[in-house]
Length: 258
Image (cartoon, rainbow, N blue to C red; front, side):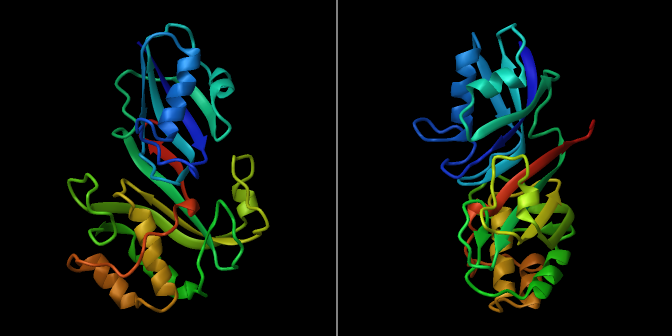
C-alpha cells in the first residue's frame, strides 16, 4: 500500500457533511468518486474531522491509502475533483498515520455579521449585539472546561471535557480571509470572527457556543448565566439554537511533528 496525506479545502454548502453516506451528497463521497477516476485497485480515505452539514474547510487533513503503485500528486487529484473541492497539498505519509488521532489541536473560525447583508459564506444575526459582553464570555472558554451544555447529545464522546488553547472574538476583513480560497465575501467588507483552537471538539460544539454567545449579545442570556452553563450542572434544555453552519470553517489541523 501507498499512503498520502492530503490537505483539502472545500465548500460544504450543498453537502451533508464530510462523512460518506450512500446515495447522499457528501464531501468524502465526491472525493472517493474523483479518486476512482485516477487510481487502480482499492483505496480508502480517512479525515481528521467529520465536518457537519453545510460546514466548510480551509485545511482539512485526509489520509489516502491506495493499492495503486503509481505516484499520486495534487495536480493530478485537482484535475479529477469537482469545483467545490481543492487539494492544497499532497505528500507521502507513514502507514500508521491516523489524522483524527495523531492531531495535537484543531482550529475553527466562525464568521458572522450584524449588517443584514445576506452572504453565502458568512452567517448573520438579526439583532444588534453587545460584543463586549460576548468577548467576556469568550474569555471564559480558555483552559479545560466541561462543555456538556454546549454540544449535540448523541455524538460519540468519552468525556465532555475539552481543553481550549486559544479563542477570541474580533472584527476582520472577510475579503482578506478568503483571499486565494474557494470562498467569497460578496459585498461584506467587515464581519466578526470567533476563533477557537482546542485539543478536540464535541459534535456541533462550536455552533452551540456561537448560538449561546449570540444570546448573550442580544441580552437574552447574562454573562453569569453563561458562566453557570459552562461551570454548573447539565441543563435539560438550552434556550438557543445551533448557529447557521454557513459561517463555520475548519481552518487547520495541527500535528506534533510539524
